Length: 121
Image (cartoon, rainbow, N blue to C red; front, side, top):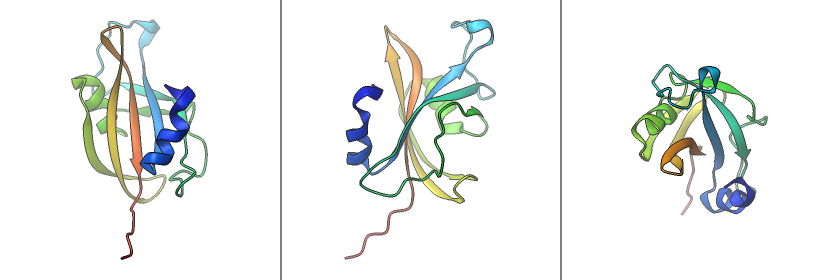
């Protein structure tokens, strides 16, 4: 997935983040809840527009409360879309969370994050 996603970030005009749930004792049967924690294992910035983040987010840990759309996408195993306000960037961000499946189960969530776009006609 991450080997070819630079082009995808450019086409989407968005930052792409890959979130993986943190589980106690690496117990993969532990269900993801709204209280679950996630770690960012991948972050790519678009070269076709401005990035949302000043620093690389790889290794950052977040909670389901901080990233509710990521947690919901992981729990429901479905695509979730919405707007959130991220304290780190202090602006409304359009987020599309896509579950990443492997061998029949959801193992991560890919988040496409896009700031406000101003279109001048």
